[in-house]
Amino acid sequence: MNKICKFFLKVFAIVFVANAALFAVFFFDLDGKLLFNVVEPFLKKHYDDMDRKDTLKTPYNIDEFPKYDYHS
Amino acid sequence: MAKKSVTKALKDFWYGKPHTAAEGGRRLGDLHEDKTHLYKHREWRGVKDTMYYFYNIWLYNYIFMVKDIMVMHGPITFAKGLWRYRWVGQTYLPVLHWFDRGLEGMRGEAMRASAWHYRAMVSTTIRQFQRMFAADTRLHGGRQNELYKRTIAHNETVWGGVFYPWDGEIQNVPLEMIPYFVTCHVNSHTVLNYIDAVQSIGLPGDPCPMCQAESGIFVLDDVPDYAPAVITCNEACDASVSTSTLQDWFFDKPLFSLPMPMLFDDPLVKKYVMREIEELWKFVEDQYGIPFSWEKLTKKLELQNELQRFEWEKWEVAAKSDYYPINGVAQALYRIYQTQYGDWEIWHVTDKKVRKILEKCVSKKINSFPQTRHRVIAWSCAPLYYSNWCTWAYNCWGLNVIINMDSLMFDMEIRTDSYEHTLEDMAQYHMWAPMRRMAVGGMHHMFELWDYMKRFNCDMVAMYDQLQCKGVQGLHGLFEDEFRKRDIKAFWIPHALPDSRTVSRAEIRRLINDYMSTVMHEEPLDPSLLDFDDSMTW
Image (tube, rainbow over all chains, first blue to last red; front, side, top):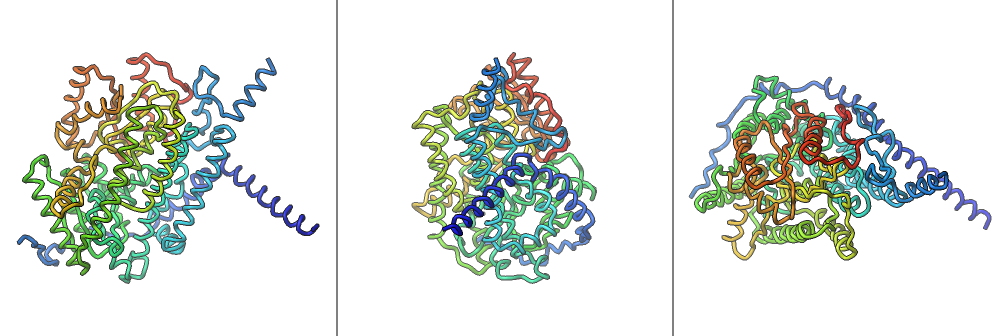
């Protein structure tokens, strides 16, 4: 009985602390602050530094595909 | 005295602070940091609504975003896409802050119903980009997998309904809806990369920035290669024709162009569009080798008609009572997303939840916007980077946007009793595409405003002015004349659709503030929202 009580108390404590921590993240907008100040600048730098294909060198092979003529 | 202030503090804690300055108001403007507009702390809406927002909106949506990603092709697919494409990484991570902007100051049923609309849009967005990534040859070493062979790409203004005959066999994913359109609402910074990219190759900066951005995604090589064929469209504007040409060049795939005729109130033109839709169907059959299914088409159209019928019920409540629980931005975005993307399960799930809230509001006579001073109809195309201006306008001035042009575009059911009727109505639906009917669709449709104003019992017009849309600019003066002649209260909102640099959010607020104080001689409900710096915000 004592063991069961302790187990439930532990579960309750964990749930309570997790809820309180999540509520703090929510209320003080810690998710927004992290995304704005850390995640987004990091990702932007990554995208800015990325090697990209020069799309202007894509040949414009307009005649390569068959003529779509469905008019009967 | 002390007892009084303790009682007020307890009351504010339990119910949330009252809206207006006169009642010792909540001063929403003070919650934000300067420039970034991040919250110093999120809003306390009273115990019940704060807990609802925390558990049922913030936490619920974070959990279900993860769940959607797990169920729809998994986290590895998402991580690969996130690492490869700017528009997903830079845009969609702060999605809960898009909720915050749209739902700021909302309480009770308005907060609940509007949030369900946002949830549906998030889920549909995840569905689309996950399908793009799962089928993308760039993320699979150039391999064309089974999903690639069963996906079709199309312009975002091609209504998803034209692909209903292949429901369950071919998945249609619009090219620009997720990499461009939705990004502007969630994080307005992302799109600027694409606008600048297209100008960097020598194209002029004065055409519609939407067309520029849609081309710029290709210039920056930021489009997944997820389908063997593509359907383009002129989006009823000449700049978009150029977008299609660039897409044809850069995508380099079998392409079918489904035009929107510039003249459309004409039975002969309708016949032409009907034939174009049939040709599109033949193109899909040829490219994918899967036959057209009339049964699938009518089944999906019936489901879409169900959505339309509920929309009409919503409009009835919005038009004839004060018990409509959906705010202006949720109404507009959900409706345009749903009608353009086409039928999908999540819309039905959402409508079921919203119906419950709507019925509760009507039966218990709950006014979700009790500080309404003016019932506003918003007309023409909205600024994508500030679609939540109406949330601000209600909080600051009591301007309640009841309905908007985007919602009213597809005001029709589609008949399924015969092939001819179905095709005729589908052609009509296609011709009433976004930016078509009421934006560049000629004076008759532009001026439907007066009828809708009456029908929705509105006393004020918020008139959008897309500065780089050559089609609508010509009608500016005509509207001015009509507003004067009809003695209609109206204010203009100039903007450049996705580009927040042309007319800033602060400038839009200043114009509305000026109108409300100098013309209407009204005092703001919440003075802390009159002037603030959010120049760096998402």
